[in-house]
Image 1 (cartoon, rainbow, N blue to C red):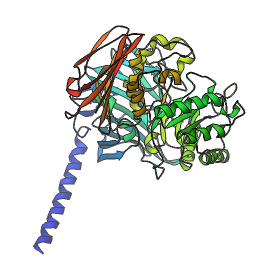
Image 2 (cartoon, rainbow, N blue to C red; image 1 turned 60 degrees about the vertical axis):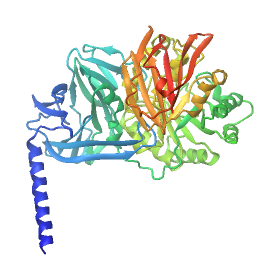
Image 3 (cartoon, rainbow, N blue to C red; image 1 turned 60 degrees about the horizontal axis):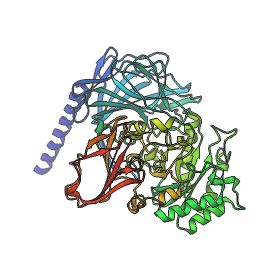
Image 4 (spheres, rainbow, N blue to C red; image 1 turned 90 degrees about the horizontal axis):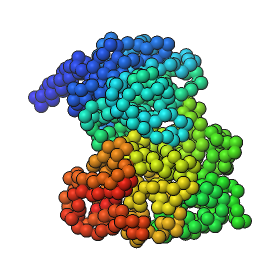
Length: 609
């Protein structure tokens, strides 16, 4: 009885202390679990601070006809612990912590805020809607004048550069993500996460230094409860921002049941060298044979396979790949974006019954996945179409790569068979215009700090020869992109004879290249200038770096974050000239140089066991 009384008293004490904690949190300034990030009221809005310094202002909030000024500190609700496993991405085991707060905006609208150790997320939750139109959003971010920012003009396919600006640009529409350097060694990346049905994606419109969140068209009438996607600001040092998994931390867990059939991997890809190669059985066979030679698990049969030459069909090409132990992926036109004059096959996925029939056929003949191309923007109808495609492909065990598409917003967690998406100005542009030639190196050194932070990126890297327009990045720069750029399906761009002409260590590197990573570290870098990253797969570390400038550059190799008990390394650098393009060294790990000097637009890769 005495023991029971002690337990009861203990429970009462715990309840009292929990209540006291909750009450104390209500009166405190909203903060992250580690206390580094805080929110303060400012003129009816909020100011986000890191270590006591202002990072970014959010001058207004609200949904509806007018903004709703905040009159009091958002109230603490609960602590959150995030813990989950990914099948692909920059980190397989993801953990995070947050404090959640709520601000009641009016009788049927509230602002839910989560402060993580690495960023801020918030969304609006609405109730008691009666066939209401999608309300106007008033969220705005104000960036201090003089702050450096790397932002991309919005396009349907998110295919553009991220130029540096230090002043307010002309008014315009901007895509996610947007990187801001707010002070010495403090950065903020603005994006969004967890698009669900009945929602559109959003973008930013600016007037001066104020950037307003504007959701794309949503023509639904809303009834009952509804909420927006998460508005996200990742905050920290450049390394902390690059390594963050906040976009997937905020997204719904996997919705597809068994995932045993999902396997990230490297793909041989025909389009970069042969625009219309996928309608030629003989050319497809060359890329199947390349996959065999390099031990790649996948081959992509791109557009126009419905017009196959040589008296063959797509089923013949799929059968040939399967006979060689290579898993085929095939391309489809989404038939909602570029249609007239565009390649096919078209109009096979738009209706539910057609989509199910087509994907069932893919599954039956042994297709492992689909690349779906040419979407038409971020409106609610398109977002639902993406979700329809993801749910249908999951039923038929098909991997997914979206092209001509929006950027990732966390679907790679909810639908882990979505292993990649384009949404990037990538190497296929060597096929289109000469612009990429002179700007690729600095662009490549910007993407790890912008686009690739938020999710997989099908850039189609690694070309040693030329496409329609030449590239002036070096061989080692191109090889480094396969490590620097994360994608669950990593499509290798070059032609077979070019890959097979490379030295044995380069071919062996490509044969063993992972497409999913246990860990990712940013070791050094600055947007558009240079980047050095380390990624781990199992017991092997891959360290890669590139020079984004047109001058020689000496980089330090800060390997202190790697384990000490590493034994051997293969270091691949640029050689002296075109006749000797490689300098490959097999060394003990303790002999790894402390610095490397890279050629203009050069690079390096180290594989450390």
